[in-house]
Length: 223
Ligand SMILES: Nc1ncnc2c1ncn2[C@@H]1O[C@H](COP(=O)(O)OP(=O)(O)OP(=O)(O)O)[C@@H](O)[C@H]1O
Ligand SMILES: O=P(O)(O)OC[C@H]1O[C@H](OP(=O)(O)OP(=O)(O)O)[C@H](O)[C@@H]1O
Image (cartoon, rainbow, N blue to C red; front, side):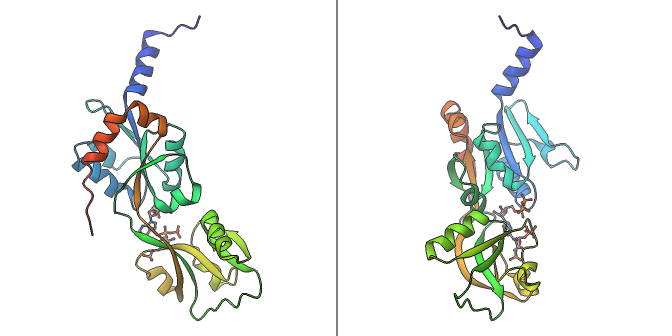
């Protein structure tokens, strides 16, 4: 028979009692945490300037942790986090098996096709598409019946057409400044993006009240 020490039992109880929340590091993170704080789900140490990644509020039984934005849906899908915040771009790219509970109406931008100013797709040869969002790009061009060659990059996508690595890019555009400063322009908008509250399916089943309580208190600002 498997026996646990009382301290192991305590650790396990604490792990399962707490609601794990995956926050996206970077441009979205602080805004998202502040929405949670305003809604009464605070954990002030989250914003400390340290290298710590996990933070707890024992009274409210909340455990926040910082992960790369593109990893949030992995933590949530696999249950390491009960809830998390991910951009619609990430959800459409990785199609995780999670519940999408709420559009937070922040982190707004568009997924676009862009190219060097004056570029015209004559549709005569395979179109070279540089992107971080390979699945979104493949789906988009497949629906149009356009033959493409995907060049998967991890950042600074705008450089690809300038150096002749690709004909077009599929990337996020917010203000348009990055495109403008690199002499590129939007050719087509593919879909709008904003941050979404997502939940693990079984966590939602077992912690429905707690998760719905959070979702119901987040103050989503309309445009
Ligand atoms: N320029 C932008 N304006 C507004 N929202 C953006 C912009 N770029 C990205 N986003 C949104 O914010 C999310 C996080 O973007 P951020 O740039 O912080 O991460 P990233 O560098 O793309 O992530 P990773 O490090 O995992 O590649 C994106 O998934 C998207 O939903
Ligand atoms: O329209 P804008 O307001 O200029 O924003 C768009 C830029 O923001 C994102 O880049 P990010 O800063 O995340 O850098 P990276 O993708 O190159 O890593 C995106 O990939 C664009 O490059």
